[in-house]
Amino acid sequence: MPSTETAIVFPGQGSQRAGMGQDFHESSPPARLAFQEASEALGLDLTALCFTPDERLARTEFAQPAILVTEIAMLRALEAEIGLRASWFGGHSLGEYTALVAAGALPLGEATCLVRERGRLMQAAVPVGVGRMIAVIGDQLDRDRIETATADLQVSVANDNSPKQIVLSGVAADTRVAETRLPDALGCNLRFIELDVSAPFHSSLMLPVEASFGPVLRAAGASIDPTRAGRVTSNYTGTFHAADRDAVIDSLIRQISGTVEWRANMEALAGQAARFVEVGPGRPLRGFFKALDIDVTAITDRRSTTRAAAALETTEDPG
Image 1 (cartoon, rainbow, N blue to C red):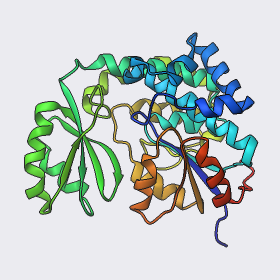
Image 2: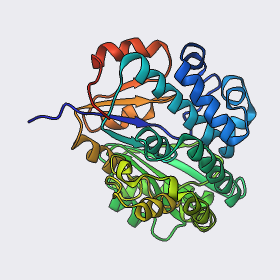
Image 3: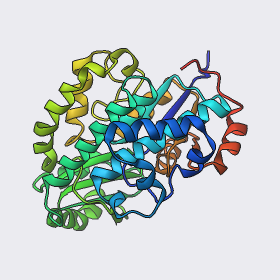
Image 4: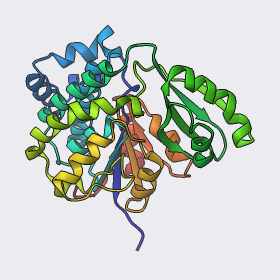
């Protein structure tokens, strides 16, 4: 019998923008409560950070909690207003934490504090200018050939986003060497886009962060509900989280320097759900799903809610 279940996915860092979530905050009591809960847990006014032009949004330490609370505030408004429900969840990098909150596997306040510390450690791990991230764009990219061509470089596959996009991360000079090699190695035309990020995320340069963040995450581990985490895809493994607290924690730690196996995450979600909704201040994930011929309804602001409600005809998943 064909699935009628819904999956909700959340973008990560890079989707932030000034004013994000403000329209939901102004009109939705559940959204306001989400901002209040996260701000109190963090000891920081996240509405001021999100709603006005603020240079801190470019800094990983602040961008990560700001994106997370915005996405949860949007989701709670949508749950109350259009009855949006889902059985399955996924999130890209930082978005995996939002997905865990959405699934009820991690409290919002705890998650907000965790991602701020995660962001602070990631930002501090590598001096500005040492690292670099580039998106490699082409038709039917061969990951094995990319990894073989860059094996002698300090470059990692940071994100396996779709058959048409793979992101590389590592030492800046080595990423530039990779740009010169890959067209010949893959035997096709490629486009390269340098990402506007402050550090080489999801590369071996992030390994020291795992050692520092691990004890922080383990200390908060008692608040993780592993059964509910089993409804969330793991960026590190590419499959759904095991319903085991230690395994969830280990995957989240290793995600920091490991590849975001987003293509595998999309395939895992597609094996369970028939409808897909992207909730966040931007909609980068919709394009990745499109490369797999999967349609996604994207909700980025208040104006898109009405269109989404009509497209979804109100989901019936029990969540």
